[in-house]
Amino acid sequence: MPIVRLLATLILGLMLVPAATPVVAEESLSQYRLGVGDKLRITVFGHKELSGEFVVSGSGEVVMPLIQGVRGRGLTTAELARAIADRLRPDYLVNPRVSVELLGYRPFYILGEVQKPGDYPYVEGMTVLNAIALAGGFAPHARRDKVFIERGRGASRKRYKAAVTVPVRPGDIITVRERFF
Image 1 (tube, one colour):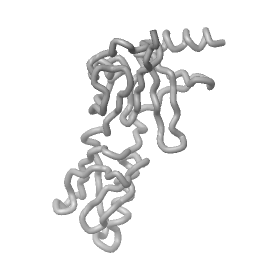
Image 2 (tube, one colour; image 1 turned 90 degrees about the vertical axis):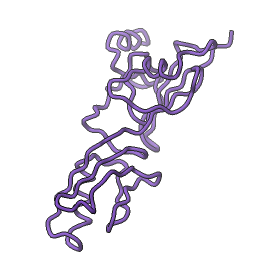
Image 3 (cartoon, one colour; image 1 turned 60 degrees about the vertical axis):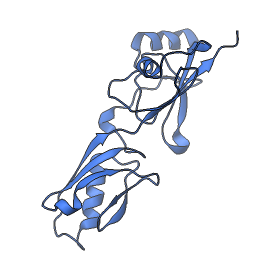
Image 4 (cartoon, helix red, strand yellow; image 1 turned 45 degrees about the vertical axis):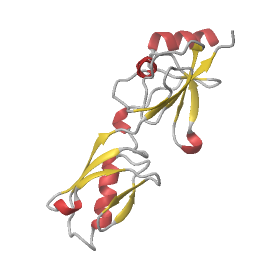
């Protein structure tokens, strides 16, 4: 069975292989859930004073004029737009029309045996190999066959062994292990 799993990873390249669980399909960015550090443009139509660029704070909120903090972490942009409209209605606006646009994704992190570990801005279409290259490449003692991605939120966060062709997602933590010889 491990050979089947390895072949699936090599052939498809778009799948993650958890250590002891079945193959898990990739999450689409069309279902992207906001997280800490995401940059947004929020437009309240007809009300420039309420519109602007905002960031999902460390507490997971988007702080706006009048309504203060609105929970943003874990929501899609459409869900956040509805939540903002609900908070503005009826105390401030009769029929608020709100749009939320994602301007910039939260960073991903790369740790372990790379030249420059740290956080890096996410770019759509990035793979694990692109991320390693962005971090200066493998360090001399890197174990190139032991690369892991941690993905998810809170208690649902999981760690997967990843091929270099696996897509990186905002908020991912990539770890390159060390070889001992």
